[in-house]
Amino acid sequence: MKGTWIAFDTATDIASVAIGSAGGAVVSRVIRGRRQQAAQIIPTVHELLQVTDTSLTQVDGFIVGDGPGSFTGLRIGWAAAIGLSHVRRLAVIAVPSLLGAAHAAGVSPVAACYDALRGQVFGAVYAFADNRVQTLVKPELFTVSELAARTAVRPVKAVGDGAERYREEVLAWTGREPVALAALPPIAGSLIALASLAGYPPSREPIYGRPAEAQAKWESRHGRPLPNTSR
Image 1 (cartoon, rainbow, N blue to C red):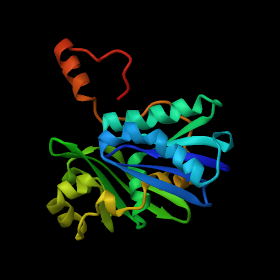
Image 2 (image 1 turned 180 degrees about the vertical axis):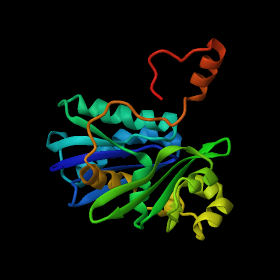
Image 3 (image 1 turned 90 degrees about the vertical axis):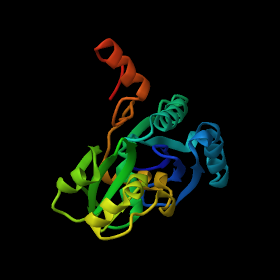
Image 4 (image 1 turned 30 degrees about the vertical axis):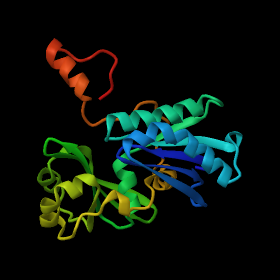
């Protein structure tokens, strides 16, 4: 994947935006707090363009973390990427959000866990070697114990707000303290590296991991799936 790309990671409370090229220089910014994401994401893009002396006409495409994660957060990141891509009809490439967090951890193998509430996490386990990604457990909804049971591999670390929330279970599994998202490099930077490394295709819709609360209530009340929705 050649050229200059802008990446968005908005799956959690700690969002990030990055600009750069795979194997080259990448400049990132972090946006903390879901309430700040909608207001700050486009100004952050403009800041990064100024800092790197780049114009939108020099951007070759956009990369987004496609979930699972926060419904609202994912929509913000996708709306920004798709809106900006329409100017020149550029590609929008989706990379699993959990894979971005795992890559940012800089170790292998690694578990990534985002808090899904209700005693569960959006979890996955990855290994990295020789510029390749191995998905040991693909992103799904688990308890930490269910995630641990899916693979015989013991992760070096578990990262994410879900790993923090269920610290005792993570300690029993990995033998190490969970790593907070705030302790990782901006995940958007990892998305740029991964889009080239893993060869993800263009996409137009995030993966939420579970229906939004409003959707779940509608479907329960009507006894059928909400029309025109993505799960």
